[in-house]
Image (cartoon, rainbow, N blue to C red; front, side, top):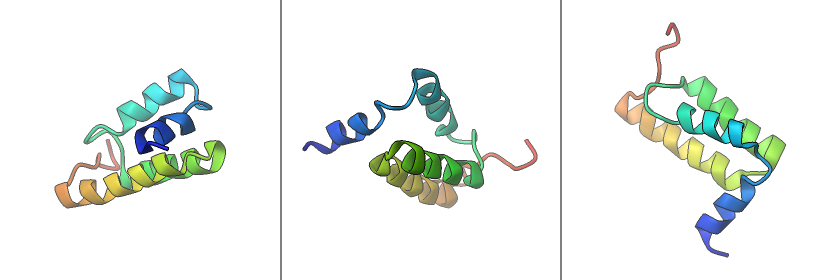
Amino acid sequence: MDKNLKVSEQLIKVSDERILEIYRALKPYQSTKEELLNLAYELESLYGAVENANFIRSLIQTYEEKGFFKKDSE
């Protein structure tokens, strides 16, 4: 199966509203590392969206390197 199709298929169970919240959370400076880790856990555990959770975990690594996390006090 095409990887993009698999990633999309895993999100079918997620509400449109939650998808928009996730989209906003993934933008630079919008989330802390802990918030993104929790988001990855949510996608994996509640929806079985393993590919999407792994994408977020890889994004966390990039955000660490670039300093793109929201500050905890914001």
